Length: 152
Image (tube, rainbow, N blue to C red; front, side):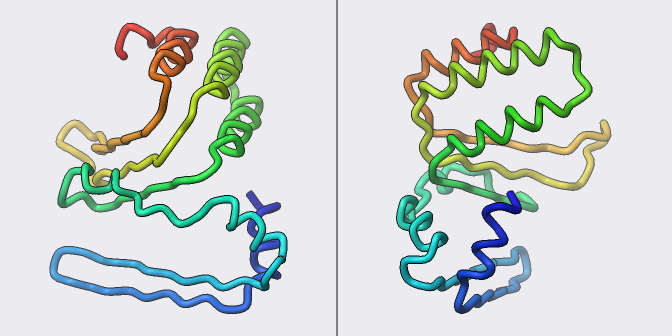
């Protein structure tokens, strides 16, 4: 992640952050401008602004929301590197690697999520995720490689 953040900082020319507080929400808007034709500018041009229409389907009154849209190959690579460092048994590591290989053939759109940070009576946080992805058969195959295919 640092490989992307540090050049972005050196390529930036301005950053504006706006915070809007209401009785039941906090809205954060930001604007970043970068030097034309810099490495960050070229990366951003590969990932044009997306209206994130999927956000209209998220449940209301959650404590936090997030959404991403762009090239997910980097995320899959990051997940693979992260898993390589996790203290899990070798069989799970192999299943995860196989699942990621299958997911490389899927086309991801917008990914959104969120939830409440407050613990429930059972001591768990409520979280959700919504992903635009296809073909769905590839995702079923990827989850089946993990042993989770019966739930999708």
